[in-house]
Length: 274
Image (cartoon, rainbow, N blue to C red; front, side, top):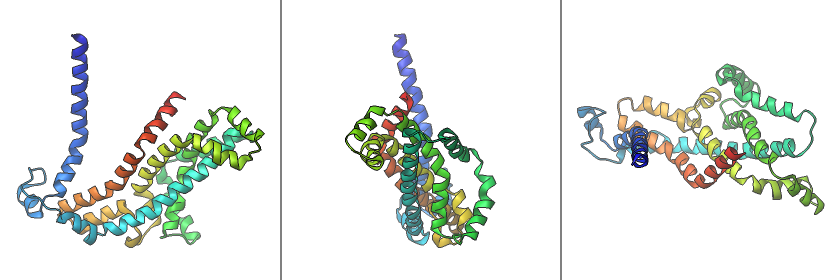
């Protein structure tokens, strides 16, 4: 009886916590389908008395969500790919070969992520101006890759270091070089970690606001998160349109997480065991 009561209390608490977490999301989704007149007459927190999908059309076309999503994908996809490729190569070298000072190199790469990004805003903006990349998507890609590389290398280093050395030795005896070992042996075994990091980095980069407004100035080049600020300024009192733009902006990250959910959970489980 006591065990049943504990189980019931646990499930009840989890349901309440889930509802508490889902409440803001459901509120935004419901508000995105209400008309302006409904919200103006009854208030933002009232029960919906109307239904429309025109708010999504307004956010998509009039609010520039389509252009912002394209910019976000043009930044996020290359940034994630470059970050993982460079981090995997660095982690392979640091974990599988005796490089002098490799521990110091790894700690220095990780230490860059411990610095508050606010103190680096002005230096990054000035450096992008000096290199002629300011107000270009290339500058934002470089910033995202540079500031994420140390953390990704640190995580992948832990996975690759714990792989059995006999696997690499067997591949070497069979005549495989370092490049073949990396591409055909190590990377397939590190796929759960790569998938987990890919999902996380996609979410972080896609939702980034700070670096986007630091190295970009033109509205037509802004990714989706800064574009939401512009949407709020354009539709000051049209909360339903702003909510629709928020829902649209959340779709890509949710889709990526659902697509790589199995690998993501597997990667976290392996990291917890090791």
